[in-house]
Length: 228
Image (cartoon, rainbow, N blue to C red):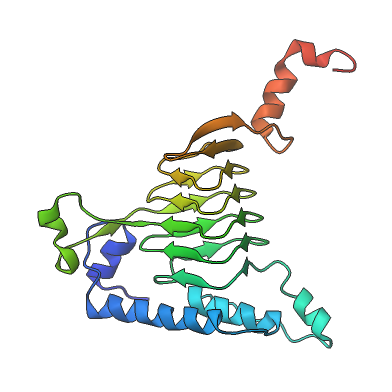
């Protein structure tokens, strides 16, 4: 797919102009796709999945329809479950893994890529802000000036509490937890609890999933005593 130079700059996290006809049209397409998803009502899982894939421009073919409604719903058990309403800027910059749950009123400003790893749980009113603006108001210049962005990456098996804001350029490591109401301004190590504004490390998560922890445990002599 060919990109204009302006769109290429946006995707690369460089200064670009958001109010060009091309990008205005891209946002309009996504806005209408979100409206269809948010207003779908009580529809089968197949239809909701189809509408979500339209938002994020996932062209993966749907599986053949099963005989019963229950069997057909089960075909989409691994697809992300995104509670409406949801608001997304472009859609094509959002990548969500399997068995992810995102509660209602989520916001994706996907100027740059936003990824969410499999089995991650996201509370209501969580905002993913990959877009940002120049600090100098002369450069910023309202709708006439340039803006830019930085990618956001959420690891697998995370839990993001309600009313969290995740800012541009943040990576949240595998298995981490972000407390409700937090503003995440910098990277979060794997298997860590953070909370606050700005979010700070509260403690480490003890889990058998953490291979580094298991490795350090196995190297410690006292842990080789019978029964330890």
